[in-house]
Image (tube, rainbow over all chains, first blue to last red; front, top):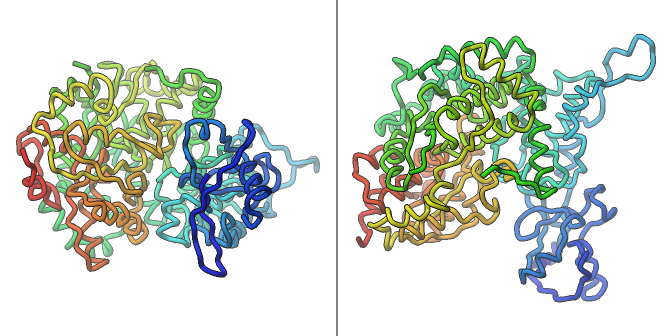
Length: 341
Length: 293
């Protein structure tokens, strides 16, 4: 395998190749141990549990973040591929495969990742029992082991390093969705700030890379849904999302031209006039009147009324699909036909 | 001919009409019969999934139910529609209790129940393999010889792969295969699988532009004459917001962006009135004129 070595003190970076024998069951972490024990004792990487629960050994293989202890190497070696191992992205490299996790932990702590007092105690003064239905809301978020694989790949964070990011926001959802927490609204206010929920660019790299099935992007969507449910919708991102709902039930199709003023407000939209005019010349600003309405749009309006009464708004609306979506993974792992094609 | 329920989505109906006309003109040449879905709405674009997720599920169930009336396959021309519809489809087919509840709601407003038999596929997948690919090779008689094309996938045709699942999200091949079949040369660059910034281009323009510059810059460095994308939202940011990128960086890019159906359409000899390049902000016609055909 090849490993990107980095010495921060000297500022030197070099791609080094290592050839060695490893048992069939070896993981990437086992392979790194072999390199360190037998070839070069100066190789640096983090490890602890070796069983996918401590979250220490996040790194990149061929550019994609993985947990070294979860990644089996036999098939890769058999295929004749020489993988390239490097440190995680979006975090400063300390040495070789070790990154500085301080920026990660700062965002983690900013979420106040512990229960806030203020909930009502049960009448009988016994333990607080949570129903399975409520627990399901945060089941996936509770699986997070803070490894940083999602943060490593976050496209929004590359562009805005202050973005709270997938790990911190998923952790935030774990407490927003916990009925024992006494600061739900305050949390949603805080997470809706400039570098919060609505900074997510929906690239889905976090869902793709998470080794524990947390699906941080879905957690961020749950936060957005909860924020809108309780009326925290001042952010342009929230207004943008709400305009889609309005469009779908009024005309069926997105009312594109009104999207900018509805998202950014009229004043800000006016400052975009020059840009808008340049698009209008190319037919990219469809006239809002008369609205382009879909056939039978009254059905989607009636559906909205009906669904609104059924009380599955907010995070519950997303959680209700998790069981079915989880089955896709189950089918894959058990070699069942995942698609009927 | 493969009969599909054609779901245009919002952009092809409105600001990206050129995507609709080129898709309609191309489809019969690659063996696809389009049955346009009329009684359908927006898929929610991920926004309704976030604002009112239960309504998102019902809107998509309604689209799938109408598609089921006319074909086994619902064909999209947009990444975001593809993800939203496939996700809803998995939710509905993988959980009978949930589907029953949604179906009862659909029925009570006069929409047919959804039986769960529709496969949601993007035009990209239809012409990257199987019969569609064979027909594409015949249809692309004019070729794209001499044209260097940067494939830009966008996010929601690749990730999350458990829902999309057509190809390896880190090593996709479908666009390259189509470009080669059309006689063009695909250029490679790392940002081809990354985000164009579109979902937050209104709410967080600066962050979005920081993402947008990567594919444009890298594709030009790799020598691309044009870029092709299967997603009209990526197209809108790459084409229309490119001028904002130029204004904020003081640089000139001028990279023409083609919809997938347009690129194949050029190779298949579609008419100007079908390709409608004059609707683009960065005009692709000068770059295409250098074609040695």
